[in-house]
Image 1 (cartoon, one colour):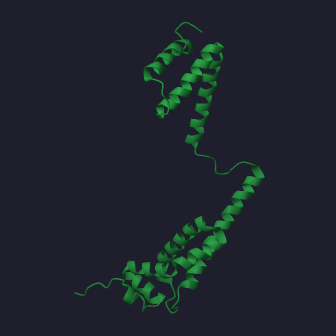
Image 2 (image 1 turned 30 degrees about the vertical axis):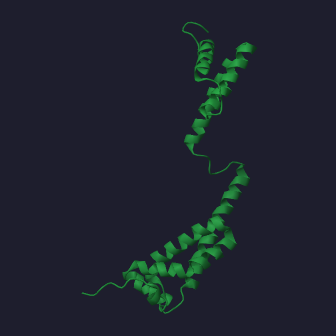
Length: 189
């Protein structure tokens, strides 16, 4: 029984990229050495072309793609960097084409082709309807009651953040006073 050889700095430094890829076919952890060697350069390349944020995604996808395709790597080539740059270049081109399609659709329609999620739109629509109903009810109050109600609303917001010095009982009393004026009573409209 032979002991498994694990990647280590001393042994990995003596191996070329082709040997690392060959070892990674049976022991995938060897592929991490390839990332350590070339990940920074691939990231910098992608960052110069697309920006730092997109570069992180491109770098990760480059090494995921390389890992999936490592069995087809031409191991007569000792350096894998050109292979990795080729993968990154194709991913960058794909990213740019997708961005161009997005911008053309936006220009053509004036509508973002990636709308906000449906749940956010529904929540906003329902909140807007509730605000309109509430504004209508507040508008029906006489000016004095409206001023006190809005004061209570503002004080309640501050109270919930701990930034107001009005006693809780006072707020509850104000609320009870105006609750009876705003809430529709059965049979009254």
